[in-house]
Amino acid sequence: EVQLVESGGGLVKPGGSLRLSCAASEFIFSSYNMNWVRQAPGKGLEWVSFISSSGSYKYYADSMKGRLTISRDNAKKSLFLQMNSLRGEDTAVYYCVRAGRYGMDVWGQGTTVTVSS
Amino acid sequence: DIQMTQSPSSLSASVGDTVTITCQASQAISDYLNWYQQRPGKAPKLLIYDASNLQTGVPSRFSGSGSGTDFTLIIRSLQPEDFATYYCQQYDKRPPTFGQGTKVDVK
Image (cartoon, rainbow over all chains, first blue to last red; front, top):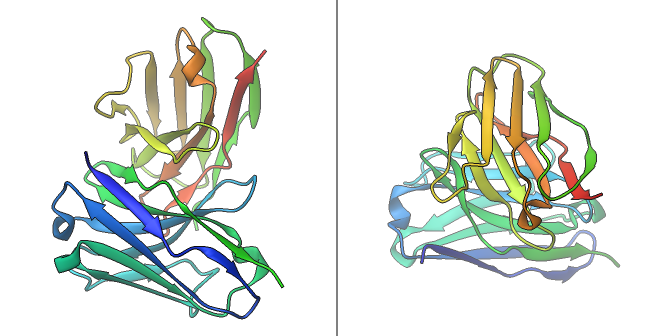
């Protein structure tokens, strides 16, 4: 079964850092662009970051620009999101999402990031 | 950024009903519009891509239409598993943006 499994979420103090990971299985990871999408408690979906299949192109949401680094290791079929200078408003479930040919077609179960003192 | 506005924000319906959700883009996006379903406590799921194409495995009671700025998702003969929140999303311009969601709950 095609699957994405996130990890690395947790409780962090304002100003702190976290590194999220996403492990892909049962598809050719290196052929797909990937995204991170987040959802604050009780709120809608917000795109956070994109990386091309080769890792050459990276894009970030303005709300988090300068505080994020997206990366991938195609050999290990893994996606990463380094988040720095975290704020309370970054509290959310973070989803690893495959960018299929026809849309965001595979979603992980999400990992929860809570920013609080 | 392109703003996506869904209407209504919530609605109540019964099993067997037909439900219509609309999505309006702040500028023309051709048919670069997807619809997602999110059940409570679950990750979103792609339902419809390119405004009107059903993702593999999605029941035919779901349909999408529209182009330019105005789009519609219709669910015919609503089933118990369809009570969920639905989001539209444009991918014509970066960043991809989502509507605020439409929650379909039990009347």
